[in-house]
Amino acid sequence: MTTNHIKEIYSIFKKSSGISTDTRSIKENSIYFALKGPNFNGNNFAEDALEKGSILAIVDDKSLDGISDKFFFVEDSLKALQDLASYHRSQLKIPFVGLTGSNGKTTTKNLIEKVLASKYKVHATEGNFNNHIGVPLTILSITDEDEIAIIEMGASAVGEIKLLSEISKPTIGLITNISNAHVKGFKNIEGVIRGKSELFDYLLKSGGQVIINDFDDVIKNFSKRFTDAIHLDGEGSIVNVKLLESTPQIKFQIDDSDVFVSSLFGDYNFQNILFALTVGKYFKISSEKSSKILSEYTPDNNRSERLDYKSNCIILDAYNANPTSMEKAVNAVFNFKNKNKVMILGDMNELGELSKVEHIKIGELIKKLNINNVFFVGRKMRYAHDQNPGSSWYENVDKLIEGLGKLSFKNSDILIKGSRSLQLENSLDIIRQISV
Image (cartoon, rainbow, N blue to C red; front, side, top):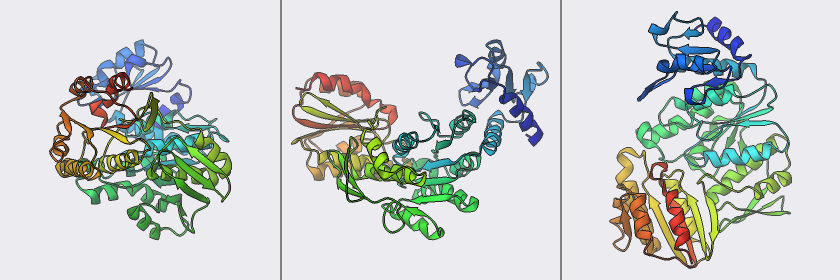
């Protein structure tokens, strides 16, 4: 698509109500982009979009070319959406915070958003809009009134972060950590490292600011490429923060003075807090003010949610799971105050050829910790169950609920963690019922 075509669509976009990609939720006076996927073709709904109120439909089906003056034919509707977002970004003269990583992206994004929103009008990625479609849609929803944007970038293959960086053009960026999460698309851990580091490649080339997580050896090694990187820890840090406790809640001290308590737990979440404090300080928000905001933050959406019910402490972390996050969550909850531990652990997806060995490792960790009440869920977790003869295994969450109905839990720390597809959060009701 030529620059003139982009400008032509952009002039209409500026007068529109925004972008629509789904005719089930069309906005009046929007521009409809006919996107395609494995099981759908948006071109088939282009006329419907116009009837429902769109003022223009971007289509890439030649049979629609010329049918209506409200159809704008392009070679690739997705590429057109990305090009339009990139052009819109170039018109916005505000800082963009870009972040990616194997674990903790959304939590870190949420924490940074809370801090920055105390001083600025912030626009941040919503939900799981962190891919090749979600990032352009996020950028195109940024208005002239916004003062800072926060763009979360996810990827499952080399080259995807490069594309998202070129579209969003971050001015400051961070990588939360690097592990073998989603290794299937990257093929191996080297691919994950190469893929995630594409954000730093962009910032190095564009002269942007980098924040280095010194607690991650791979990321710390990247710091050699930068002369002015900000560090989470050590001499290059711009905040003075000390971790006092990490379980059952994070307790930290700033400037050797005030102490704050977060509802988050685990040293890995302390790193996420450090990122938020650092970004806040970079944008002239005091550590004291940021810390107060962070101490009031309560996680939701099945991400490290803490639910105290009767005598039990329930940690619901069923949005995603990979070997690193699973191991850290298990170890953290194991160190909570209750004597009894209950682990409900589901499959870790997208691990490719590493899947079997990584699930076995989780089984070995459980065996090492000598946890009695363990419930593995999903076909992949069968490998972990095989390491623990005393554990229970269920093929899916429905079978799990059946099994749990015969039990009761008291004075227990209960961890519920697994990949999104297992929907382990559906077990929450039965766990409440059997809590005493």
